[in-house]
Length: 234
Image 1 (cartoon, rainbow, N blue to C red):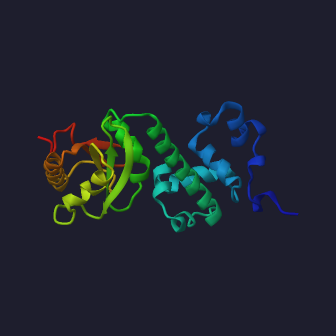
Image 2: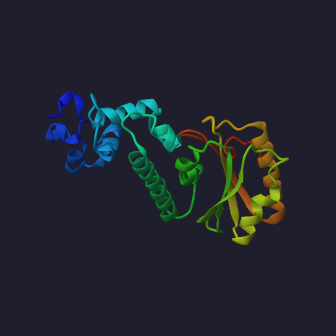
Image 3: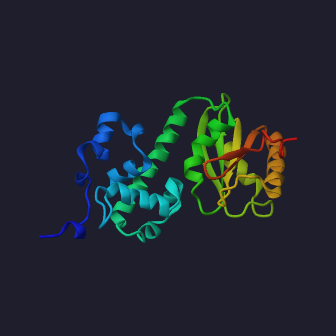
């Protein structure tokens, strides 16, 4: 017979009114904590920890949901009780959330603010380990055509060709675009290179009759609109 101290703890070890899955069914997902939601995916705890406690340990070790999103599968598997299968399930759940956000943004119609534009890409881009530059392409009514990747790496004028920014816009017959890139450090404060690139893009857009509406810099859970700050758009 396996002693209680030696076996893994399961959700069923909790009182029925404390089990995350039952609570979700009864009161809805929004009422559950992050640890409870993660515990539903884990199902099983480890020696000395039930699934909710293990979930909280994972959140603490990886610095929250954004840390889990940024972590590799191998990094996640370094945590006792978290193997490849469970790590993959967690990654899949996060990716579904990102894609749902994208679908909801597309269904909302015209993009009328920097916040709405940032919402299209925030969840995906805030976790990237390198700088990525994308353009959000819009039609004459500010409705989304698509989000097009342009460049990966350190952003500066010597490496990013301005023509590359507008190539997809011309092909898609876009009326305008929004530049967006991330800062892997998590701090979205624009750099002098960001301002210089924005200024060049705005000038080129005027020549091509494709307006650059904004340049968003994405950080962890926050963003900066360079248009709102008057950086590169004077």
